[in-house]
Image 1 (cartoon, rainbow, N blue to C red):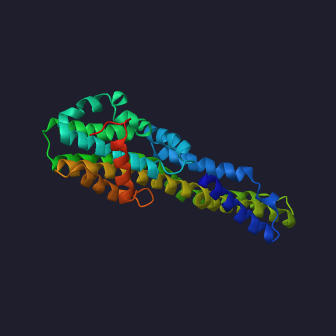
Image 2: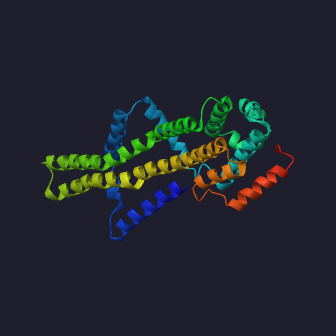
Image 3: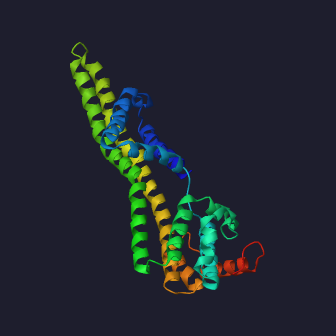
Length: 292
């Protein structure tokens, strides 16, 4: 809802300030200018991308209204799940995890965390690298390099809509100038009008510059920044999983391995050391989850 709140603040601030100096709101209503500016911006975006870019842009819009994808409680459950997986592997051997990663829905460990189980990105990332660790044919350096490549690929693909929105935002002020110039040409080309009649046409033309700048910096460019922020949240969680699994692969005990992952999280989502320790202790003592 912060997106909607931000847009409201932008409109109230701009239009409210305009009204305070005695501006006439009716002058700002120029549908033709909006069509020229926004239509040209969308057309330029379509000309600069491909089908994948268009699909990515369409998919990202419903996600813009939600907040953080991973809350503190979700990260707490994620660290606990990783602890349980590593504890089971340490006690029973890595092969003991094969049944869990091949059928997570029926795994006592994964099924205890339905939110994580429903997150395809996290589940595939964890299970794919546990599978590689079970195979025993790759060392920690090779797995780390592969993880880095996968995270980088995810980030590049996820940032396609952000690049498109950013480019559109950069171009809208220029298209606003185009609309303004076309309005001025129209005004000056109206030779039959009296000088007093040309003034309103010039005012209408200047609205194009106003709309281009407002749409760019008040509406479109903030969306690009929001997309990047949401991507950073996901990347940070993937990095936390990465360092946790690598710590386990390098021989660290599960309590130390999840401390590596906890430290990799953003401070807003990072549980305190004692909070994570108590949560893990409670889970291990509970009867609904597997006790390693």
